[in-house]
Every structure is written in C-alpha cells, then in structure tokens.
Length: 250
Image (tube, rainbow, N blue to C red; front, side, top):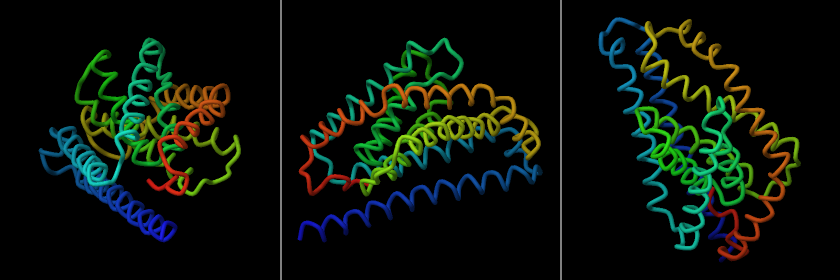
C-alpha cells in the first residue's frame, strides 16, 4: 500500500504543479501576443497592471495547491524557518548589485524538501525581505521568480536523482539568469514603451551584467556551502518525514 499510495500522490502533485505552471505560461504568452499588436491603449498604458494581475493569479493557484496538500506542522515550521533565513540572507548584500544569497537558499530548500516547500520558501523570502528593503509592485514578480526557482529545484530531487556537483552548479548559474529574465518581463510590461520584441531584448541586454553577477554568486555559494547545507537539511528531513514518504512532494 505504501509504495502505491506514494506513487499516486506523486502523480497528483506533479500534475497539479504542471497545470499551474502551464496556465501561468499561457497567460504570459497571451500578454505578449496582445502587447505586440500595439493597437489598444490598455496594452500601452496598463501593461504592468495586466502583468501583475497575471502573476497574482499564478501565485494564488500555487498557494491554493499548497493549502489543499497534506503538509505536517513540522514541515510548515521548517519551511517558515528556511523562508526567514533566505530573507535575512538577502539583507547584508542589499548594497551589492544583484548578489542574492536568497536564490541559493531557495534552490537548496526546494532540492531537499520538494517543490511545494521550495515555492513557499522563495515566495516567503521575497515578502519578508521587502518589509525591510522596500515593498512595491515588484514584490509579486520576485515572489514568482524565487518561487519558481524552488519549484524547479524540487524537480531535481523529486526522485532522489544522484546528480553531481556540476549539474547543481549549472542549475544555480541558470537561475541567476532566469530570475533576471522573469523580472525583466515584468519591468518591460510595466515601464517600457513601446511593447515589442526590440524593447524587450534591449531590456534584457541592459541587465546582463547584473544577471551575470547573480548567476556567478549562486554558483560560488553552492561550491562553498551547498553540499554541507544539503547534508544538514537532509538530516532535518529524515527527522520530520518517515523514510517511505521522502520526496513525496513534487
């Protein structure tokens, strides 16, 4: 019963997350397609509002998925602590251009505890840290970007994949750029005119140096601290989850 039940829950959890992410991607594609037409004043003046509404809808679906899932109080406590640590880790480096230890901690959390925990750690870190660094219309986009970093990291560890250091370093590097591109997409929709492929490409090119710094810092942090932190978090996971249910949350 245990193994079969676990596989059924894995399938349900994977399907739920895939549906949420597919819906979010579809909404973003619709936004891009309509904005590139450039005929309606709403897309010229209210692109940021529309993009934020889409992001909020995706976040609401993700939180709903977490709410209806079976998560123990101990898992919630650990997730909350990791979210606070990720938020606090951002503050000492706030003066440096796009050096984000938060991304590294979110990735490690998602890899060890699964996609749902990774999403909650990432989105919580964005909200909490912005209480000190400044809330604004960019907060939902940061919640989504860091949440997706945790979700995709959870996929790496979902079936206890025996990946080495190199794939994890490359994954951390990639999310330095992915985070920047997600934020660029929101910034482009909110503040750039006209909305077309040329202006979007220019927005991404303008941020390449910041994104590169983010990517390199992610990789360096993983090389210095990643394996040790993963070992510690796996010990915590063994204490709060029975062995047969590990990697249940995909």
